[in-house]
Image (cartoon, rainbow, N blue to C red; front, side, top):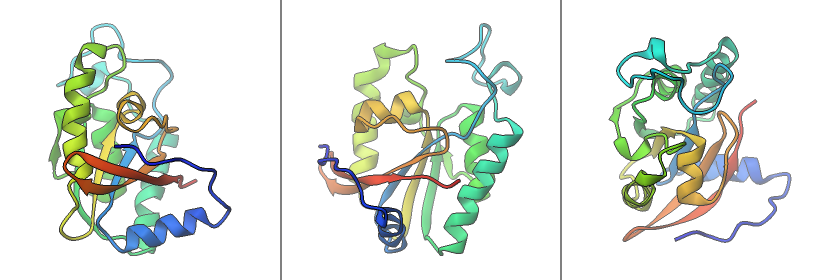
Length: 178
């Protein structure tokens, strides 16, 4: 399921961008910077962005730069799926100008450990299926990405995985856009 992780040399970022340029990868992106806090505020409602922790101006700028890096490097994107949380949808929209759908597999697991096993199985299915053309981008939460990959990404950080089929994948590496 998980590949071995090793310290990457300085040129690793360019190697990952080259890998993405060839398509066939799955890119998990943790949403960009939000208002301070952990988890969801009291009274949180999934269908009401006003009740959620949302992106800050810094986060909006970071999400935009992520998309700009993909466009400048001509990274093909087949589909963009997002967690239903507003901060993930907005990250997807600002970075890629769209999201092709919501995936409940990408729901926030912070404070929701009872959903862990089910969501990890659903994410394995997404991460192990090679996209037909381009790359699959999945915008989610740190707690959710770490549950699948063992890697806890920073806000806006990407974890790239190479699908192997049958619920298996290898971790190709981590990538950040400043």
